[in-house]
Every structure is written in structure tokens, then in C-alpha cells.
Image (cartoon, rainbow, N blue to C red; front, side, top):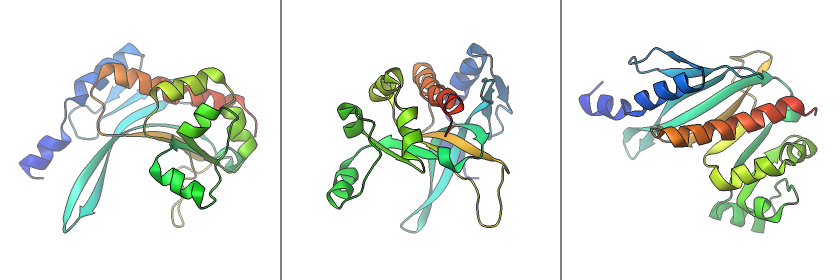
Length: 196
């Protein structure tokens, strides 16, 4: 690996993540090896925070695009699969062409977010909590999804589906990491409480 790429991939997020792990009673795994992650105990299953690097072709050059990912695994239940992202210009164009999103009857929230899911009633119940909606309106970024991780002929986690929050870049601010953890843990708990 070239010196520039190595320097790009080694950011100052490591110290922040290690501090956060100690703060929440989590464990810090393989510091310094390039695949560091934090594992935090949670009543609905451990939460893993890790760096994700995706190589994207830009012209004729492969460029690393980094993100911070929070993941926890839930028992497979297609009725509970959903996704949440901020609405943007593409959302308004899609709505103009007739695309429908799941609405939770909170006009401010419905305008700010795109909610998708296999079972609309489940998604509405998930976001029926006013505190959760307010938290998302104030601090949410990235995308959150409980999705099927089955790939072509393989399932890396048989019987489980990942709930995943992905945000651009490597989070190297402790307060922001705390906010994102809260944004992830709240729906993780709600998914466990709500039957489909």
C-alpha cells in the first residue's frame, strides 16, 4: 500500500473510538492493524462500530470512500426490514413521478425523511415514538437499514439480518460518536420491542 493511501486510511479516529469504548463499557479490538472496531454490549445484541472502506472507480482511478458503520444483528424477519434516510432533491423528483414512502403522520418528520419497509405498519410503529422522531430530526445523518444480507447463493449470517447505520467519513469527534450511538441504539431497542 502506498504511503499516501496508508496515511489516508489511518486517521485520528482511533483515539476517539478507544476513548468511547472505555466510556460505554465496550471492548476495543485490534488497534493499529487497519481493521479496528469497537464492540459494545447491548441488551438486544452487541453493537459493532467499524470503519468501512469501499473502492469507487472515478474515471480510471480507484478511490477509497470511507464511512463509519454501526451494526447489530437481529433475527431474520422480512416483515421487520426497513430503511431510513434524509429526504433530498432526488426524493422530491421521485415523489413527483409517483413514488410513495411510508408516512408516520408527523408532517415535519415525513418531509425530512424517506422511510421504506416491507411492512408499513411495522415502520409506522417503530417511528410512532415522539422522542425517537425528535432525536432523528435533530441529529440524524447517513442511512439506517435493517436489511437482508444474503448475497448470491450465500448468507454470511444465517438466521440473522444486520441493522446498520452508515455515515460518511471516519467519525473522529467524541460528541458526534456519542450522538450516532444514541441514534443507533434507540431503534435497535424499539425493533426488539415491536412485533411485526
